[in-house]
Length: 111
Length: 113
Image (tube, rainbow over all chains, first blue to last red):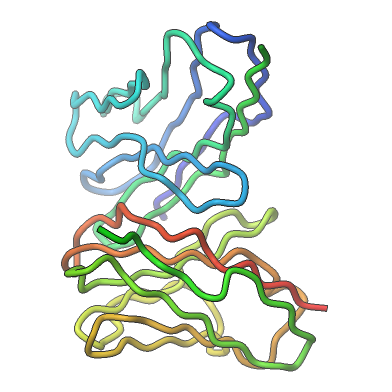
């Protein structure tokens, strides 16, 4: 079945460092891909999305490109801030009409 | 515009009891999906409702059920609670059935003693 694999955390970075969180997927057809962020005690917030191959999603300095050839959707940010500390989830939306999530990657940014 | 509202935020129950959780979608949204989040299994799809009908169901036992009302509000019920049902239950709303859910509530934290 469809699945999403994320790099394990926690990831600890210093403020202004470059961030990459790897995400790869297995799916039939052409799923839409998402990154969600979860802050402590809160639900999920959509960070960015891409609906077809080579699309780039971007928001708040975060970017991810839908790479069909490598089945990847890696999240990047050029300069992280303390306020970016959260758990990040990669997900796909498949033909079955449901979101399938990766296990989540905890990011901790130190000042 | 109000977001997705889930009530209550926290619940404590004991094994064998049943529980009902509520979700009010964004105004105008007609589809509601439910997800369970646990440290071990991560985020898993429970079911989706649209126009008061269950349109899609995840791989959960029959103890997990739900319904949707004519105003699009949804409830999920878990009967005969087990320790493993302790989780954060998240609700998401979208405009129509088949739309990718993009708006989540803050969840209901259910703890089973």
